[in-house]
Image 1 (tube, helix red, strand yellow):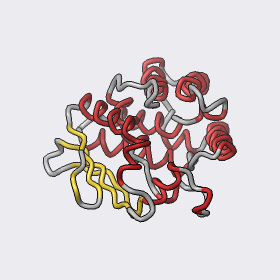
Image 2 (tube, one colour):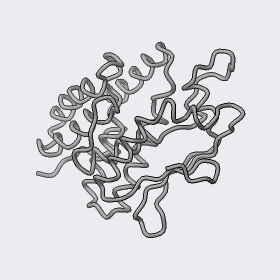
Image 3 (cartoon, one colour):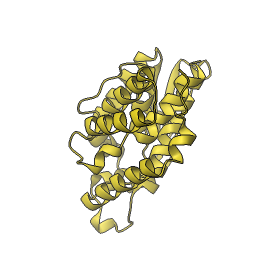
Image 4 (cartoon, one colour):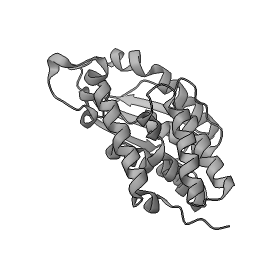
Amino acid sequence: MASIVTYKYIKQNPDIMEYIRRADKALEALGYTEHSFAHVERVAATSSLILSTLGYDERTVELARVASIMHDIGNVINRVDHAQSGAVMAFRLLDNLSMPANEICSVISAIGNHDEGTGQPLDPISAALIIGDKTDVRRSRVRHTDFLTFDIHDRVNYAVEESRIRFNEDNTSIILELRIDTEISPVMEYFEIFMERMILCRRASEFLKVNFEMIINGSKIL
């Protein structure tokens, strides 16, 4: 059965958009970096790039976009176990939109497995979502610019002047390329808070049968 549920359809759904807004507001109150539309749309773009480049069919790519834009809605309930909460919320929302069960399974398993504390790549959609989510580090995710109030997450994100995901020439490696202002945050601080995420990205890349590499300030780190 064909489904009307697309990335564009989700973006035009006022209820789902409200969950995304309120989830980000909850994280803002807790002092977390930006998790609103800029984040989920960037994750959707990255997951789409990955699966399209690797030759996956159009509907698989579309489901990755859907999972990506909805992946953080569980934060409206609590940051703890937000991946699992979000998966349950997404099930109800997508079931009410009459999405086929096999597609709902793909979306909610990706959402439920995107957090580095509990997540694992289970299929191409979940693997692409993991990489898209965990590689979104950038200055614009910091909500304020008062250096005196920065914690390590603020420093690391604010130090990133440029961030992009790309493939190497023969599409055998996914490369996260960063330019970091080391006067704001040393490279070591990046790994201090993001090492677990990078390990999960490597695991997700291996699931997709490609390598995961990182280049920081022109030097290959991973």
